[in-house]
Image 1 (spheres, rainbow over the protein chains, first blue to last red):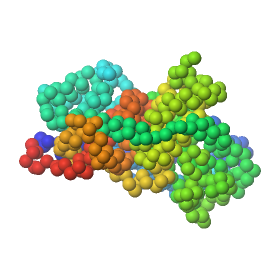
Image 2 (cartoon, rainbow over the protein chains, first blue to last red):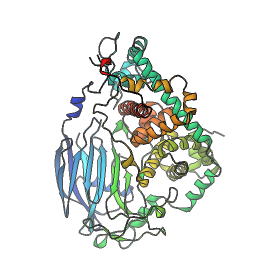
Image 3 (cartoon, chains in turn blue, yellow, cyan):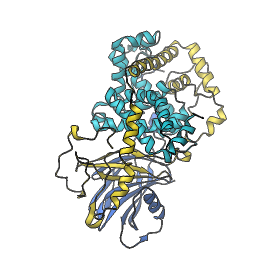
Image 4 (cartoon, chains in turn brown, yellow, red):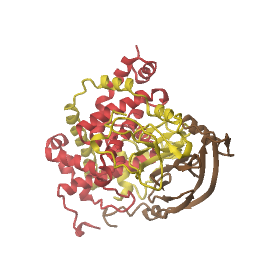
Length: 136
Length: 213
Length: 204
């Protein structure tokens, strides 16, 4: 065996060939129109309120589950623009997802069941929010 | 401090490296070196520690690497002590308390912004915070779950900055807020996400320094 | 009067200014040391210290007493440092990003050869100005997250558990990240000190 010349031991090849990660993606419109919260968005409303972001209406515009592979971008349609999600390669205990939803560029590390809420711009008297949740 | 193998086995989120091969001869690979690094920090299980100590006893290469790792730590501490010795902390607590009494927290300013009459009619986004910072719950979310924002930036318009807010359930909210102008005023702006803003980025000398938030 | 961290936090929370001053005085040097290692510039480091304690004061209500104060303080400090680095615009262009799981050329000579400069007499070695500058330069070249974990471990002796809390990462990540931070700094040091790589004859 060669003296230490690289870190190709310890299953690096297996680490690099990471399995796809499933991420639930929702596009939600938050506004102060008539008070209404779509089913499943009450937790979002509560979290926003505690953070100081008060909206009375949360409407889900779309919902899908993406299977993200390392380094391969996946697009999500948002009214007026496109968001791009890319699972970052590397051995991370939790998935790192780079998200481009102009003008915001961010990389988030998703714990199972937790959600990242990304502002995605104005829409019809409200704000669009891209919601990412790593599925358990 | 050593840990039993059982404790190490069941710690959530803890990846334990397996001690491979015959303990008499420990191959010099990343596994070994990671164990050596953790050995220096006193963070190995009894079995791992025994394996490393055998390797240290039998392989001069391992001893040399250990010496180098320890030496780096010693050098960093000595360098740091020299740097701290040159610093002057006189009045620091006064400055901190003075700053705390002058300005409200960023969250309070965010909340204030949401109450302004021109939000959110007609797509206007008017906010009051100034820089990327994170509000985090003091304790880590149980089980190591939750969202961690690794990075967040805003493309043009340059006066927008991301603000990260964490909920007590471990979720993260990333919101774009308007960076204050040089006078400290916060002006409402129409956010047109597909068009770059007209203003140039704030020159470095006008950016708020640490402590001016 | 109790002066442990939690007692001081409780008192500071209810407006006791003297209690908060005691916390500042207790940790200002430690926080400064980490900040100096992260941002290098002394003035920026002092700004970081001030900003970190301001944030602490403003967030006292959210501090949970089952966590340790100093891991919370260090978390805030590291975040402020990263903010300063990115505001300077220095991080992406100057640090060398590397994938921890791509093969690195971590030969024995790269790691072991530095010991002749560091291992035998580190206190004397660091007094050598050139070596001190090279260490600082090497630290500047590694990503902030590696710099932070190395500084917190080496300067403050935080345990892996405390590092996981302070940096909000799993404990398993602490071990690998710290190892890679050390390895990368040592590799950069060996390169800057001109320590040659082993010849093929030395390979098995």
